[in-house]
Image 1 (cartoon, rainbow, N blue to C red):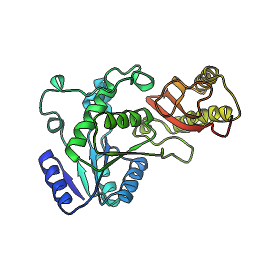
Image 2: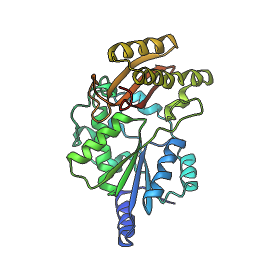
Image 3: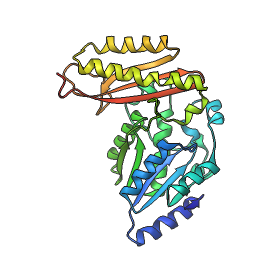
Length: 285
């Protein structure tokens, strides 16, 4: 695996691969890799000749400097894991390489209608995500890029952005990788004590309970959301939201909608956890 730190070196390598008629897959990350990230790499290796992973903690998407400073860095361990996974290239740019101009004077990409769910209380977060992903896409110029479904709102944002901007990149969502308990794997899980990790899996179980009720004919979405929030609170969470939305566009679901996504976010200890599951009601109503 080659480690690449500059845009010019990256473009030289990509050009060489293109001249050999290789296809390129891209997996952007912020490091502190776990099996969920590696499952994206594994899927990428099945779909393309060459796979590039980036590790870059993007300041533009953090609304609090303390969160940015606290984000875990495990670069040496990450390099070893990617080497073992047969990744072809690791792009590790500095902030100055990614943002050669001042960040307060940076052109920003803004995808509309992202001020719900995780965008509601985090102004500028998704603008930061969209901007850095477009920059990375321009640098890597991949044929396809892979993102985990755990960040479902982010996945839809990127799909819409790519379609709106006519970028020639296939966006592939990969199912959430989970612990044996059902807890979605996340770099933020390291903030949890062993006891909190056990309790954290109840977020997933709560979403499954909502799914079961919907599949058995429950139709009062608002009531289901409120009950789920109450259950999380009783389990020791500080719930942010539980939402039953249409899967295709994250609009509030209504009676008759069949392809749904049940999403939840909640704080436990120092970690803000997010999760979501699909809910297909085609055969239920």
